[in-house]
Image (cartoon, rainbow, N blue to C red; front, side, top):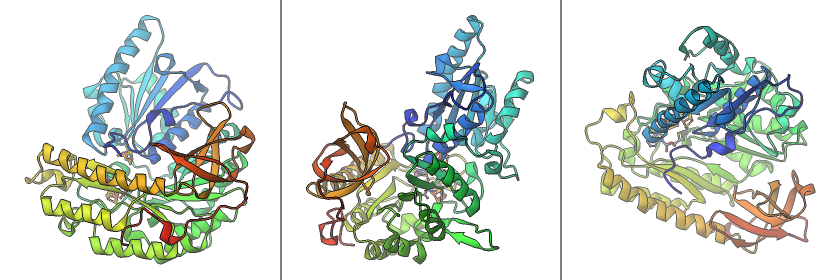
Length: 490
Ligand code: SAH
Ligand code: SF4
Ligand code: F3S
């Protein structure tokens, strides 16, 4: 996989605005573009819902929009700088629309907003509102203020729970989520890895109460959602109030959610190795609705680099953890994040990372060149690694991951797996969904299967998806442990 500027989600996947039904009369149009991680995708949906209730309908594109929101990511320099070039384009668009007598408001939300605050107005005065990830529930009020004031900034970490302010979505809003939806269950991070801005942009760790999550999940499943992906910067550190005076961990939350018959699949992301407790590992053994795919970022295979990153785990500890997880769920597919070229990383450190990848065996992974971020300890170090060394290491690491990914996908051919059908495929008569191992699967089939879990025999693999046909048998067979080709020695 490539060193993508914005994480995992392409902006298009998060674009959208409320459907016409159940909404007030729509005079104004909204365009939201989401960068970065799944948390931002979820927040973009929430902002869209919120503004739908204020009368904003869907704009086809930014040219058509009275209100444009960029929901931004600060994780790497490239992700952050991209926002300013995008804002340059939007400034021209705003001026053009003004000539035509149309007003445009530009909002910068998300992690760049949090990190840069009023500095954004200084760099780009066409921006009307800057709002951080913990205060976007105040957007309607901030937009009203922007009618009177030139530059509005809200980067507070308000004490009120923003989720409490985001009213339960209407059926029309929930229907737009499709078959698979994200639910934020945890936010923020207290771990302070020395490369990372998240603790500064998202604030301290916070878990939503179980009851609020169950309520949101019930609304989603009533609207046809079948797969829930629980999201959080440290989702497996989840410890939400259980309503009985105690706290529920992520395993307990999954068990509660699995009780609902409408929920067919549960996933969660992103996990920290140190929070992967026994109860959660056991849930992978015992809970059939918990999908056998785990994103478990390790970042590096060198103990010296891991210590410098403040990860508080070793390479051997991580490998032992993978072994315990695989003992509980032998067919589990693992993925990870890697950073190459952290300050001080030697050739031997990098070789240790390649060795860890060989040892674990991944189904996929994201990998990045270290990007020094202002305000983080890593950026202060004087032993930064040269760009060409980072590029060369990244290419080698990505080639290894890609070969593991392809081997993992190839090993699916001939197997029958349960596929949750999510949507129509690329061509008429085709449908598409996901395997338990998070692989995209395309097959021939009718629209009536959308939302259903069907047994699919995998017949071929392409660069980015698997191809299958509806299996005559009704039950899918998980691969035996020995068949798991992406497994390394672990
Ligand atoms: N909470 C998640 C990470 C969120 S950020 C976790 O702990 O796994 C997603 C990924 O971006 C990280 O796992 C890391 O690999 C990468 N990343 C974060 N900061 C970075 C930086 N300064 N340079 C390069 N990659 C970075
Ligand atoms: Fe960033 Fe580390 Fe927290 Fe993940 S655990 S969000 S990498 S500080
Ligand atoms: Fe980016 Fe913020 Fe997510 S920095 S990765 S959008 S938490």
